Length: 151
Image (tube, rainbow, N blue to C red; front, side, top):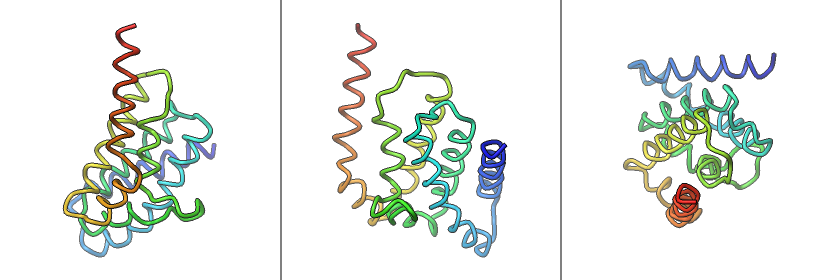
């Protein structure tokens, strides 16, 4: 029941983020970024990679990152997770060795969109990505996947 409620809440945030919202609405949505990133971290830690909750959270984050005023929140530490920047939660999904499924493809696509959107014209996010060695991690993950597909 909690997972279903979480999925619905993330989907609602996604719908609102997709709308051409007023600056006040966008500002209010800033408070949703850290809890969604915490959800992503929890789902990743518990290997709930096919979860509709994870799909909804990642999609919502991709849409939230589309709004310039919210992008810097992706570089901030995730509340309740310590000093881990938000981008690290999304990056972890990309490099986690896991069997591919349709759901995980959707999740990873949304994570890439969120990282890409968040980095647009946002030096703090770009710095956080550099600090996390994002490029090296993604290249390593891609090399591993290409080796798997050849086997």
